[in-house]
Image (tube, rainbow, N blue to C red; front, side, top):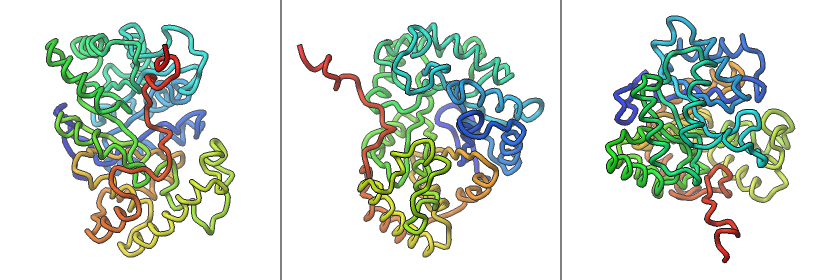
Amino acid sequence: MKYKPLGRTGMLVSPLCLGNMMFGAWGNSDHDDCVRIIHHALDYGINFVDTADVYSAGESEVITGKALKGSRRDAVILATKCHFPIDLGPFATDRVPNTWGNSRRHIMKSCDDSLRRLGTDWIDVFQLHRPDPNVPIDESLSALNDLVHMGKIRAFGCSTFPAEHLVEAAWVADKNNLIPFSTEQPPYSIFVRWIERDLLPTCKKLDMGTLVWSPLNGGWLSGAYRKSSGQRNEGRAARAPARYDLSDPANQQKVDIVESLVEIADGEGVSLAHLAIAWVLHHPAVTSAIIGPRVLEHLTTLLGAENVTLSTEALDRIDALVPPGRTVTADEAKWETPALSRSLRRV
């Protein structure tokens, strides 16, 4: 395993990051099985583990803490996140005030709660899960800086922040002599390439580590969704049927591209999933790719992708299918500014 610097943090991380979103009620509720998956990843050489307080309402953090208990903790770069109301989930609209967001109050409480669930004295990378337009960025940065000085976290970052927010945060940190964000965690895959336009260049210029999530685009690039497979009604397709409805013309376009990508993968002598992850890691601004298995088989089929080197011909063929900076369908994962809402556009 070749470890890479995580931005300016001084920490070295594996090119594959184990994402624990599917551990708990959202995916695999067998704690012992989840612990075995985590241990298998660590034994393979993965030293970067990412979770969040909102995943299964804190259950993922509890499972992660069980797996890292004892001597394993020292060898792992542990990342978690706060922002969403953990009891209601990320898509809740009836949020209780002060139980979510990026205020000092919520950041401080969330960090203490995560430390308790994880069963650890410190978090290596504490991340703001989404932007909060209601809170000035200097308040959030000040709170995160205090957590560093208190020894509760070693570094901090953000997830799915637009490039302009990263620039503002860097300017505010410099102006107020604060530690800036050290990492950003955006969505990135062959099907979702918008971050190549501004976000990845900005991260590189600001010397931020970049751990990208959904490199398989929610399973579309795993090889499970093929023309020969037909409509699937299990796993992710059962939880979010509209996103995997093959009668949708947009999804039909994805399937068509998948068939072409399989041909490219065959020519490279690799699986489609390995092609997709290797492609993500090929970008010089990407530090690590998050893989989120639900069962051990999912993990083992992805291990080794970090060792794949794609040919120039393969990369050019992929660019022809999905041009740089584009997305195949509307990216539902992209954070949209509330400035587009009616109330902020009309007097």
